[in-house]
Image 1 (cartoon, rainbow, N blue to C red):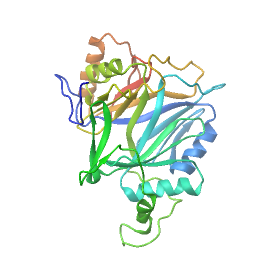
Image 2 (image 1 turned 90 degrees about the horizontal axis):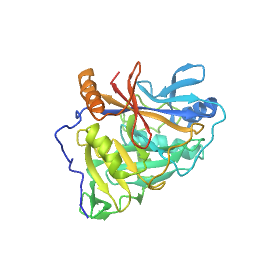
Image 3 (image 1 turned 30 degrees about the vertical axis):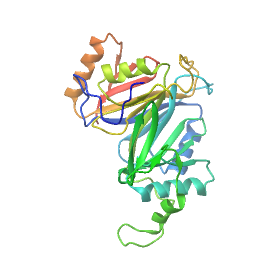
Image 4 (image 1 turned 135 degrees about the horizontal axis):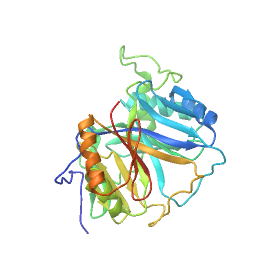
Length: 312
């Protein structure tokens, strides 16, 4: 089996290293309930609201755009969103976010990926969410012989899915960055530095998805595991901006039109010229798209929506 690690697999065209993930747009069944959840559970703010649509985030660019539609339901065994991942600027802010979840008794799964500290949860309509902070000083990861694994900085092996030491993380709640003392407040909004770290998708076929995100859009391949049906791609050497898996089944169909969940995820390029380069590659590949006020909207081979735009 071919082994690929987190050394980027370059090709003749590699996406600009400053490319980042932008907002995630969700179709929701109950806008008011979703807004209340994201305000209380994640500390998000409502940036704008127009009729049945709203933009939420941490006070900077939108992280989520919610669009309410009638008579929606959740479907299983389809392509779409596995989770979107919100990255906090440091361990203290992640600790605050996680402590808020515990205080609200929202089920979540604290996990140590070695190079990130994270927890997983779902919103009231079943959309997966990851909250994390970077911890590269603790170690790194690789995909070896088709298996994901991590190494601590001292060389110890990990499967990358260890239980997070919550007590150690929560020790940061007792430290005020400016004074070195003081208990963190859990009622404060998420810090403005909070951003969309990555998006993980259910797809119908890994090689097909890699051909699209790597071969057309130019993301570098950070790792592919045929054995566990997963791949990571990114820009600029980041561990992953987009995750791909077939855990809902190889050949999984797209969700029906009346499904809650992903409308599209946005990819933010650093300037219009980079967007023009990628648009030309999309056109050369014969992939249809729609022009919007923000950029170009298209679908990957699994019919996951992707908005390509210049960063606002």
